Image (cartoon, rainbow, N blue to C red; front, side, top):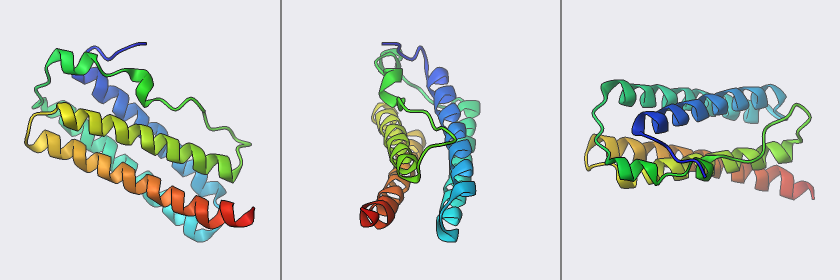
Length: 151
């Protein structure tokens, strides 16, 4: 399984995943079943834009000190979701995919926080993990409210 070579590669990967999330949630907003869900998808897309910007600042500041071994034991496959969104994806499948994506990103940020030195960098990764966890919870609630009640 491919591993990350350095912290820059990890941050590039995370920024790319955040951009994919922005694109995904923007598309979901256009297909939302209710105005409330449209607003939620748009809000989460905006938050993901903020996450990407925060990661970009971290990368540009270069104030991180990770031991190379702490980075190379991160496996890229641990943070990928094996399902890609498709135009004909059902609302249920889109919610499941959203939950999986948020869980994978949460895991990445938690793993990075565990490897980061104490201080601002550790806090930044914990904050990002917390945000991803909130997103996942919101999709779980939507799944419970609309998908499970319909069945």
